[in-house]
Every structure is written in C-alpha cells, then in structure tokens.
Amino acid sequence: MGRLRWRACSNRSSRLLRTRRQVLDDRIVPLGYSPIGLEDSNIDAQLLQGSYIAAQNYGWSEFEIDPATQQLTVTTYGVEPYTAEEIGADPGAIATQTPFIANQFVVNPQMD
Image 1: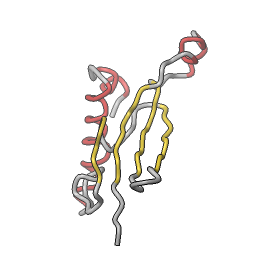
Image 2: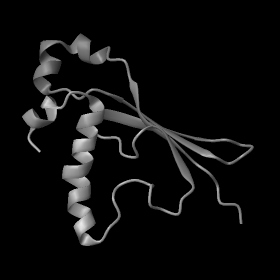
Image 3: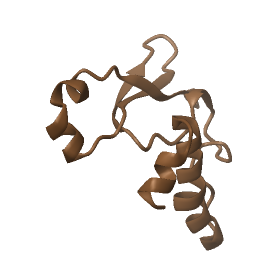
C-alpha cells in the first residue's frame, strides 16, 4: 500500500483496518490461514480496545498476569510513526508525543 494512500486515511482506526485487510488478511486467507486476530480461535480472549493487530505505529507491549485469576492482560502502547525528515525538522515534537493505547485484550486461563 502506498504511503500517500495510507496517509489519506482519516484516522488511526481506518489506517489499521486498511492494513489488516490489504496487507495481511487478503494474502493469508487464500492460503487457507485464518485472518489475523483471535476472533476465530479456541483461545478465550476478549478485545478491550483497538483490534488484535497493532500496526502503523511505533509501539511496545505490556503483559500483566493477575496473580489471583491468572488472567493475562496485553496492552500495546504506541506513538504516531514519523520519518527521518520529521525528526530532523522538529525532534522535540517527536520526543514529546503522548503514547496511546493501540490495543488491549485479556486472555482467560484454561484451567485443566
């Protein structure tokens, strides 16, 4: 997908949906694989924010396990992507971006 078409998407959510469909799902589903995400899996998971894919940002993930329930919470934070030219022009603006939650979901344990 061209960068100009990607930047033309009005918000982070529409950019992510475009990426998921055109870059990932459209390429793996014809090969017999499930679409990206946990929606069609046998994993007991619940999406809290965003989607199961966190892309189109510079991000990092936090993994928390509740000691009482063993429930796993995965939170991926991100900042908007930037180019080398943007860093050169205004490094302070890049360094002071406020991180956002790109996605968050919980996975419930399977107790056997």
